[in-house]
Length: 189
Length: 189
Image: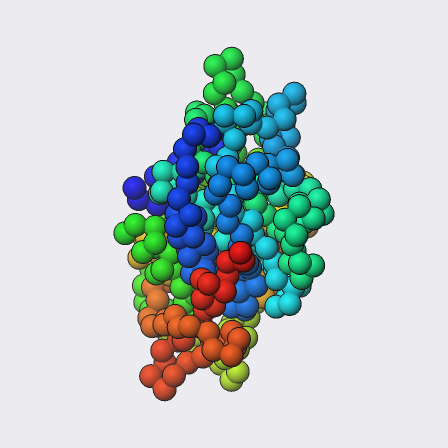
Protein backbone atom coordinates (compact mmCIF):
# COMPACT_ATOMS: atom_id res chain seq x y z
CA UNK A 1 0.00 0.00 0.00
CA UNK A 2 1.24 3.48 -0.72
CA UNK A 3 0.53 6.22 1.78
CA UNK A 4 -2.64 7.44 0.05
CA UNK A 5 -4.07 3.91 0.22
CA UNK A 6 -3.12 3.64 3.89
CA UNK A 7 -4.65 7.05 4.71
CA UNK A 8 -7.79 6.19 2.74
CA UNK A 9 -8.16 2.88 4.59
CA UNK A 10 -7.57 4.52 7.96
CA UNK A 11 -11.19 5.19 8.85
CA UNK A 12 -12.62 5.38 12.37
CA UNK A 13 -13.86 1.86 13.00
CA UNK A 14 -16.00 1.08 16.03
CA UNK A 15 -17.03 -2.54 15.47
CA UNK A 16 -14.52 -5.38 15.50
CA UNK A 17 -14.13 -9.13 15.36
CA UNK A 18 -13.57 -9.73 19.06
CA UNK A 19 -12.26 -13.24 18.42
CA UNK A 20 -9.21 -11.70 16.75
CA UNK A 21 -6.22 -11.47 19.08
CA UNK A 22 -3.70 -8.67 18.59
CA UNK A 23 -0.11 -9.57 19.25
CA UNK A 24 1.69 -7.48 21.89
CA UNK A 25 4.61 -6.99 19.49
CA UNK A 26 2.28 -5.44 16.91
CA UNK A 27 1.14 -2.80 19.38
CA UNK A 28 4.69 -2.28 20.59
CA UNK A 29 5.81 -1.66 17.00
CA UNK A 30 3.10 1.02 16.68
CA UNK A 31 4.59 2.77 19.70
CA UNK A 32 7.92 2.41 17.89
CA UNK A 33 6.43 4.47 15.04
CA UNK A 34 5.20 7.11 17.49
CA UNK A 35 8.71 7.22 18.95
CA UNK A 36 10.07 8.31 15.56
CA UNK A 37 7.44 11.02 15.04
CA UNK A 38 7.68 14.78 15.55
CA UNK A 39 7.40 16.20 19.03
CA UNK A 40 7.50 19.90 20.01
CA UNK A 41 11.04 20.98 20.90
CA UNK A 42 12.01 17.29 20.69
CA UNK A 43 10.77 16.99 24.30
CA UNK A 44 9.19 13.55 23.78
CA UNK A 45 6.82 13.85 26.74
CA UNK A 46 4.47 11.06 25.67
CA UNK A 47 4.33 7.68 27.35
CA UNK A 48 2.26 4.68 26.27
CA UNK A 49 0.38 1.81 27.87
CA UNK A 50 -0.42 -1.29 25.85
CA UNK A 51 -3.36 -3.62 26.51
CA UNK A 52 -4.09 -6.71 24.47
CA UNK A 53 -5.57 -9.39 26.73
CA UNK A 54 -9.35 -9.97 26.95
CA UNK A 55 -9.25 -9.30 30.67
CA UNK A 56 -7.42 -5.99 30.30
CA UNK A 57 -9.55 -4.91 27.35
CA UNK A 58 -12.70 -5.54 29.38
CA UNK A 59 -11.24 -3.33 32.09
CA UNK A 60 -10.65 -0.34 29.77
CA UNK A 61 -13.86 -0.50 27.73
CA UNK A 62 -16.37 1.02 30.22
CA UNK A 63 -14.42 4.27 30.44
CA UNK A 64 -14.74 5.18 26.77
CA UNK A 65 -17.51 7.10 25.00
CA UNK A 66 -18.42 6.01 21.48
CA UNK A 67 -19.82 7.77 18.42
CA UNK A 68 -21.68 10.76 19.81
CA UNK A 69 -23.85 11.18 16.69
CA UNK A 70 -25.28 7.65 16.78
CA UNK A 71 -27.99 8.23 19.34
CA UNK A 72 -29.22 5.02 20.90
CA UNK A 73 -25.92 3.25 20.15
CA UNK A 74 -23.71 3.11 23.20
CA UNK A 75 -20.71 1.45 21.67
CA UNK A 76 -19.83 -1.97 20.34
CA UNK A 77 -21.70 -5.00 21.68
CA UNK A 78 -19.94 -8.01 23.16
CA UNK A 79 -18.32 -9.88 20.32
CA UNK A 80 -17.57 -6.62 18.48
CA UNK A 81 -15.37 -4.85 20.99
CA UNK A 82 -11.74 -3.76 20.54
CA UNK A 83 -9.09 -6.36 21.30
CA UNK A 84 -6.29 -3.91 21.91
CA UNK A 85 -5.78 -0.47 23.37
CA UNK A 86 -2.93 1.99 23.45
CA UNK A 87 -3.30 4.67 26.08
CA UNK A 88 -1.34 7.82 25.23
CA UNK A 89 -0.13 9.57 28.36
CA UNK A 90 1.50 12.94 28.89
CA UNK A 91 4.37 12.79 31.36
CA UNK A 92 4.07 16.00 33.36
CA UNK A 93 7.49 15.41 34.92
CA UNK A 94 8.85 16.33 31.45
CA UNK A 95 6.46 19.14 30.52
CA UNK A 96 2.88 20.31 31.01
CA UNK A 97 2.63 21.37 27.37
CA UNK A 98 1.87 18.51 25.02
CA UNK A 99 0.87 20.68 22.05
CA UNK A 100 -0.29 18.38 19.29
CA UNK A 101 2.29 15.68 20.05
CA UNK A 102 -0.45 13.19 20.92
CA UNK A 103 -2.31 13.92 17.69
CA UNK A 104 0.86 13.29 15.70
CA UNK A 105 1.56 10.08 17.61
CA UNK A 106 -2.05 8.87 17.42
CA UNK A 107 -2.32 9.33 13.67
CA UNK A 108 1.06 7.69 13.04
CA UNK A 109 0.00 4.67 15.08
CA UNK A 110 -3.41 4.49 13.39
CA UNK A 111 -1.72 4.47 9.97
CA UNK A 112 0.59 1.72 11.24
CA UNK A 113 -2.43 -0.21 12.49
CA UNK A 114 -3.95 -0.07 9.00
CA UNK A 115 -0.75 -1.42 7.47
CA UNK A 116 -0.83 -4.22 10.07
CA UNK A 117 -4.37 -5.15 8.98
CA UNK A 118 -6.02 -3.53 11.98
CA UNK A 119 -8.25 -0.54 12.44
CA UNK A 120 -9.83 1.47 15.19
CA UNK A 121 -10.68 4.78 16.64
CA UNK A 122 -8.88 7.65 18.34
CA UNK A 123 -10.90 8.30 21.48
CA UNK A 124 -10.68 11.57 23.39
CA UNK A 125 -13.95 11.20 25.27
CA UNK A 126 -12.73 9.26 28.28
CA UNK A 127 -13.80 9.02 31.93
CA UNK A 128 -10.29 10.00 32.86
CA UNK A 129 -10.38 10.03 36.64
CA UNK A 130 -12.30 6.75 36.90
CA UNK A 131 -9.91 5.09 34.45
CA UNK A 132 -6.94 6.45 36.40
CA UNK A 133 -8.27 4.77 39.55
CA UNK A 134 -9.01 1.53 37.69
CA UNK A 135 -5.47 1.14 36.33
CA UNK A 136 -3.72 2.77 39.29
CA UNK A 137 -2.08 5.44 37.15
CA UNK A 138 0.34 7.73 39.04
CA UNK A 139 -0.61 11.42 39.20
CA UNK A 140 2.32 12.52 37.08
CA UNK A 141 0.73 11.05 33.97
CA UNK A 142 -2.10 12.79 32.15
CA UNK A 143 -4.42 10.59 30.06
CA UNK A 144 -4.45 12.29 26.64
CA UNK A 145 -5.98 9.88 24.12
CA UNK A 146 -6.82 6.21 23.76
CA UNK A 147 -6.53 4.19 20.58
CA UNK A 148 -9.13 1.41 20.47
CA UNK A 149 -7.96 -1.25 18.03
CA UNK A 150 -9.10 -4.48 16.50
CA UNK A 151 -9.99 -6.26 13.30
CA UNK A 152 -12.73 -4.03 11.85
CA UNK A 153 -16.02 -5.62 10.79
CA UNK A 154 -17.74 -2.54 9.54
CA UNK A 155 -17.97 -0.86 6.19
CA UNK A 156 -17.18 2.85 6.26
CA UNK A 157 -18.24 4.96 3.31
CA UNK A 158 -16.91 8.45 2.71
CA UNK A 159 -19.28 10.77 0.92
CA UNK A 160 -19.52 14.42 0.02
CA UNK A 161 -20.97 16.64 2.71
CA UNK A 162 -24.49 18.03 2.19
CA UNK A 163 -25.91 21.16 3.83
CA UNK A 164 -22.81 21.43 6.02
CA UNK A 165 -24.03 18.44 8.07
CA UNK A 166 -20.96 16.64 9.51
CA UNK A 167 -22.91 13.96 11.39
CA UNK A 168 -21.97 10.43 10.36
CA UNK A 169 -24.85 7.95 10.17
CA UNK A 170 -25.65 4.26 9.66
CA UNK A 171 -27.91 2.88 6.98
CA UNK A 172 -30.27 -0.12 7.27
CA UNK A 173 -27.44 -2.48 6.38
CA UNK A 174 -25.26 -1.03 9.12
CA UNK A 175 -22.89 0.69 6.69
CA UNK A 176 -21.30 3.67 8.38
CA UNK A 177 -21.46 6.86 6.26
CA UNK A 178 -19.08 9.77 6.86
CA UNK A 179 -19.71 13.11 5.13
CA UNK A 180 -16.48 14.90 4.20
CA UNK A 181 -15.96 18.49 3.08
CA UNK A 182 -14.58 18.81 -0.44
CA UNK A 183 -10.95 19.65 -1.11
CA UNK A 184 -12.14 22.85 -2.71
CA UNK A 185 -13.81 23.91 0.53
CA UNK A 186 -10.64 23.18 2.52
CA UNK A 187 -8.20 25.27 0.50
CA UNK A 188 -8.38 29.03 1.06
CA UNK A 189 -7.01 31.03 -1.84
CA UNK B 1 8.46 2.54 0.94
CA UNK B 2 6.44 0.90 3.66
CA UNK B 3 5.09 3.03 6.47
CA UNK B 4 8.02 2.39 8.83
CA UNK B 5 10.42 3.60 6.13
CA UNK B 6 8.29 6.69 5.53
CA UNK B 7 8.04 7.46 9.26
CA UNK B 8 11.78 6.91 9.69
CA UNK B 9 12.57 9.24 6.80
CA UNK B 10 10.15 11.89 8.08
CA UNK B 11 12.64 13.92 10.10
CA UNK B 12 12.41 17.64 10.84
CA UNK B 13 14.48 19.21 8.08
CA UNK B 14 15.41 22.88 8.20
CA UNK B 15 17.80 23.28 5.25
CA UNK B 16 16.68 22.85 1.67
CA UNK B 17 17.75 23.16 -1.94
CA UNK B 18 16.05 26.45 -2.70
CA UNK B 19 16.44 25.92 -6.45
CA UNK B 20 13.95 23.04 -6.22
CA UNK B 21 10.42 24.08 -7.17
CA UNK B 22 7.47 22.32 -5.56
CA UNK B 23 4.49 21.76 -7.78
CA UNK B 24 1.20 23.24 -6.57
CA UNK B 25 -0.52 19.91 -7.26
CA UNK B 26 1.89 18.13 -4.93
CA UNK B 27 0.95 20.41 -2.05
CA UNK B 28 -2.72 20.16 -2.96
CA UNK B 29 -2.49 16.38 -2.82
CA UNK B 30 -1.02 16.64 0.70
CA UNK B 31 -4.10 18.62 1.74
CA UNK B 32 -6.09 15.82 0.11
CA UNK B 33 -4.46 13.41 2.58
CA UNK B 34 -5.31 15.70 5.49
CA UNK B 35 -8.90 15.78 4.25
CA UNK B 36 -9.10 12.01 4.72
CA UNK B 37 -7.65 12.04 8.23
CA UNK B 38 -9.39 11.86 11.59
CA UNK B 39 -11.04 14.93 13.02
CA UNK B 40 -12.82 15.23 16.37
CA UNK B 41 -16.56 14.63 16.01
CA UNK B 42 -15.98 14.67 12.23
CA UNK B 43 -16.24 18.47 12.43
CA UNK B 44 -13.43 19.08 9.88
CA UNK B 45 -12.70 22.61 11.10
CA UNK B 46 -9.29 22.88 9.43
CA UNK B 47 -8.61 25.00 6.37
CA UNK B 48 -5.37 25.21 4.42
CA UNK B 49 -3.37 27.79 2.51
CA UNK B 50 -0.79 26.71 -0.04
CA UNK B 51 2.29 28.74 -1.04
CA UNK B 52 4.82 27.59 -3.61
CA UNK B 53 6.15 30.60 -5.50
CA UNK B 54 9.49 32.23 -4.56
CA UNK B 55 7.71 35.52 -3.97
CA UNK B 56 5.10 34.01 -1.63
CA UNK B 57 7.67 31.91 0.20
CA UNK B 58 9.79 34.99 0.85
CA UNK B 59 6.70 36.64 2.31
CA UNK B 60 6.03 33.83 4.82
CA UNK B 61 9.61 33.13 5.92
CA UNK B 62 10.22 36.08 8.31
CA UNK B 63 7.30 35.09 10.55
CA UNK B 64 8.68 31.68 11.51
CA UNK B 65 11.04 30.74 14.36
CA UNK B 66 13.57 28.00 13.69
CA UNK B 67 15.34 25.41 15.85
CA UNK B 68 15.29 26.89 19.34
CA UNK B 69 18.19 24.75 20.57
CA UNK B 70 20.62 25.86 17.86
CA UNK B 71 21.73 29.11 19.45
CA UNK B 72 23.32 31.47 16.99
CA UNK B 73 21.44 29.89 14.07
CA UNK B 74 18.45 31.94 13.09
CA UNK B 75 17.09 29.69 10.39
CA UNK B 76 18.09 28.67 6.90
CA UNK B 77 20.22 31.04 4.83
CA UNK B 78 19.23 32.24 1.38
CA UNK B 79 19.64 29.32 -0.99
CA UNK B 80 18.55 26.85 1.72
CA UNK B 81 15.07 28.13 2.50
CA UNK B 82 11.78 26.25 2.09
CA UNK B 83 10.16 26.38 -1.33
CA UNK B 84 6.68 25.56 -0.17
CA UNK B 85 4.44 26.22 2.80
CA UNK B 86 1.11 24.89 3.95
CA UNK B 87 -0.57 27.03 6.58
CA UNK B 88 -3.03 25.06 8.70
CA UNK B 89 -5.90 27.24 9.86
CA UNK B 90 -8.69 26.63 12.32
CA UNK B 91 -12.03 27.90 11.07
CA UNK B 92 -13.71 29.36 14.15
CA UNK B 93 -17.00 29.66 12.28
CA UNK B 94 -17.15 25.84 12.59
CA UNK B 95 -15.77 25.41 16.12
CA UNK B 96 -13.32 26.96 18.58
CA UNK B 97 -12.09 23.53 19.65
CA UNK B 98 -9.50 22.08 17.32
CA UNK B 99 -8.25 19.39 19.70
CA UNK B 100 -5.37 17.61 18.02
CA UNK B 101 -6.89 17.80 14.53
CA UNK B 102 -4.01 19.96 13.30
CA UNK B 103 -1.43 17.53 14.70
CA UNK B 104 -3.15 14.67 12.87
CA UNK B 105 -3.33 16.68 9.65
CA UNK B 106 0.24 17.97 9.94
CA UNK B 107 1.77 14.54 10.46
CA UNK B 108 -0.27 13.01 7.65
CA UNK B 109 0.92 15.72 5.27
CA UNK B 110 4.53 15.41 6.43
CA UNK B 111 4.43 11.66 5.74
CA UNK B 112 2.96 12.42 2.32
CA UNK B 113 5.74 14.94 1.72
CA UNK B 114 8.34 12.26 2.43
CA UNK B 115 6.70 9.92 -0.05
CA UNK B 116 6.76 12.75 -2.60
CA UNK B 117 10.52 13.16 -2.10
CA UNK B 118 10.18 16.27 0.04
CA UNK B 119 10.81 17.05 3.68
CA UNK B 120 10.35 19.82 6.15
CA UNK B 121 9.34 20.96 9.52
CA UNK B 122 6.11 21.45 11.48
CA UNK B 123 6.38 24.95 12.87
CA UNK B 124 4.29 26.14 15.80
CA UNK B 125 6.43 29.11 16.74
CA UNK B 126 4.93 31.75 14.48
CA UNK B 127 4.51 35.50 14.69
CA UNK B 128 0.82 34.97 14.22
CA UNK B 129 -0.59 38.47 14.29
CA UNK B 130 2.12 39.90 12.03
CA UNK B 131 1.63 37.05 9.56
CA UNK B 132 -2.14 37.57 9.65
CA UNK B 133 -1.62 41.20 8.64
CA UNK B 134 0.88 40.26 5.93
CA UNK B 135 -1.45 37.80 4.20
CA UNK B 136 -4.67 39.64 5.03
CA UNK B 137 -6.20 36.69 6.84
CA UNK B 138 -9.81 37.19 8.00
CA UNK B 139 -10.37 37.10 11.77
CA UNK B 140 -12.44 33.94 11.62
CA UNK B 141 -9.35 31.86 10.88
CA UNK B 142 -6.86 30.95 13.58
CA UNK B 143 -3.28 30.19 12.47
CA UNK B 144 -2.54 26.80 14.03
CA UNK B 145 0.61 25.39 12.42
CA UNK B 146 2.76 25.92 9.36
CA UNK B 147 4.49 23.20 7.37
CA UNK B 148 7.73 24.45 5.83
CA UNK B 149 8.64 22.19 2.93
CA UNK B 150 11.37 21.67 0.40
CA UNK B 151 14.00 19.32 -0.91
CA UNK B 152 16.10 18.63 2.21
CA UNK B 153 19.88 19.08 2.01
CA UNK B 154 20.73 18.06 5.54
CA UNK B 155 21.61 14.80 7.16
CA UNK B 156 19.58 14.03 10.28
CA UNK B 157 20.89 11.35 12.63
CA UNK B 158 18.72 9.80 15.32
CA UNK B 159 20.61 8.64 18.39
CA UNK B 160 19.82 7.35 21.84
CA UNK B 161 19.22 9.99 24.46
CA UNK B 162 21.92 10.57 27.11
CA UNK B 163 21.36 12.11 30.54
CA UNK B 164 17.79 12.99 29.57
CA UNK B 165 19.08 15.76 27.30
CA UNK B 166 16.59 16.27 24.47
CA UNK B 167 18.46 19.10 22.74
CA UNK B 168 19.33 18.36 19.12
CA UNK B 169 22.75 19.58 17.95
CA UNK B 170 24.94 19.95 14.88
CA UNK B 171 28.40 18.51 14.48
CA UNK B 172 31.35 20.09 12.65
CA UNK B 173 30.17 18.63 9.37
CA UNK B 174 26.71 20.14 9.85
CA UNK B 175 25.02 16.79 10.51
CA UNK B 176 21.94 17.33 12.64
CA UNK B 177 21.77 14.93 15.63
CA UNK B 178 18.47 14.19 17.38
CA UNK B 179 18.47 12.32 20.70
CA UNK B 180 15.47 10.03 21.10
CA UNK B 181 14.18 8.26 24.20
CA UNK B 182 14.26 4.48 23.95
CA UNK B 183 11.15 2.43 23.30
CA UNK B 184 11.62 0.88 26.73
CA UNK B 185 11.41 4.31 28.35
CA UNK B 186 8.21 5.14 26.45
CA UNK B 187 6.18 2.09 27.43
CA UNK B 188 4.76 2.10 30.94
CA UNK B 189 4.02 -1.38 32.26
